[in-house]
Amino acid sequence: MFSNGVNGIVALFGEDDIIPRLVFALKSLSHRAKYGYKIITKDKCVDDTFGFNRIRSNLAIGCCLSKTSKDNMAVHGKVYHPDDFDLSKKLKEVFENTEKAPKILSKIDAEFAFAGIDDDSLIYGRDLLGIKPLYFSKESRILGIASEIKALKCIGFKNIERVQPGSIHKVSMKDEKSLVFDRIEASSKLSIGMDEASDKVLELLSESIRRRVKGLNRIAIGFSGGLDSSLLALITSKLAKVTLLSVYTKGSRDEDAINSAKSLGLELEELQIDIKQVKSKIISIQNLIESDKIMDLSIGLGMNLSANKCSEIGCDALFLGQLADELFGGYAKYVRAFREKGEEFTQDIMLKDIIDAHKNNFERDEKACSPYIEIRLPYTNIDLVRYALSLPLSLKIDPSNDQRKLVLREAAIKAGLPRDLALKRKKAFQYSSGLQKLLVSFAKS
Image (cartoon, rainbow, N blue to C red; front, top):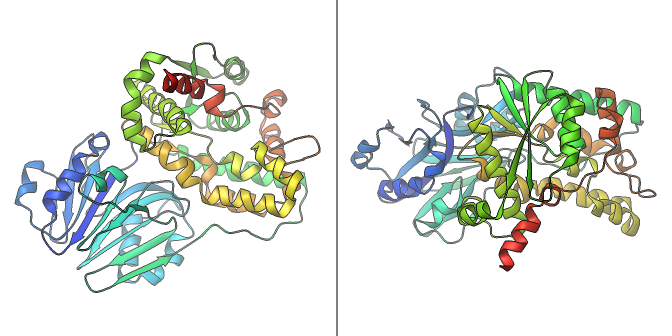
């Protein structure tokens, strides 16, 4: 299930008719187009594939449809808060005056990539954290925008770059304007104790989950049995029917996930991945996530098969615990950095990891799941992100005994998570599942 009608975008703007190239690019994203395609020009909106060859335009937006859609703007994503925020309508205000973008777009809890037409201009942009992928390339006579690199590459674009998260761009034949409407920045650290901080973290995370659950009946949670996914499961299960999903390889069945699911009293679906699946899926996964790195392939494979399973069992969305480690100091490298180079250096690399999460995690995971189901990431709530950035490092990690995510663990205990689950240490998904080991073995064979 996808929350709105658009599950991918391609936009082209040139001096000559771009429709044939647009159609070709759209078909490279057929895995996103469960309900076909739609093309928007400044004069019309056509969702009849047979009618595409009757269109002529130098400026058009193509949409991959996950359900029928009549919107004449391409918005890939969703606004979670405010409830009555009409993103398409507000974007039209931005089109009229891009200077309004910071006021209109910086206060919302949302994930989106969009493209729209305003007279003879193409306007496009991306949410603050870059949760939804968006790329661009500009050749001598044409500008291309797309949700995936392959859609631009297949029609001849070579120098393809990411659209900067938190930015909006307006391009005409005469000029180009770009504006950063919001950015993730370091903030002054609060003088605050663990009790108050953990209360606030729990409040913000609970509100984020509530917003992302709204309108859904059954939710799958990528589940390792560790802190991040267990806390998500506990809070979410109070608001909707929850199914936990554990991915593993032969010999790596995660007993922690099984025991944690029992402690939470929640249904657990186990998905075993073997070498046959790797052989049959590896090329399609590489094409889907647009990466050949072993770590990306191992995570992408797990995500893709999980999303497929979620769709098969009738779930409405897949919740994941991404960004919790970056926000609350979950990686061992943060403790090492603190010991070797001090607090300020550690805070700097944590901030950089949050800013870079779109290219390191979000894009890969969204692409991997895009044929089947929508992912939602409660830890990316912007209020939670900004609050976490304001917390002193001492509330996150203790280098003297290698303790990490201290404030999140305290919040989990307050939420009612069994203490042993709240304090449990877990390996990263690609290691605990055995997927990276399996992919390394396959690469060597």
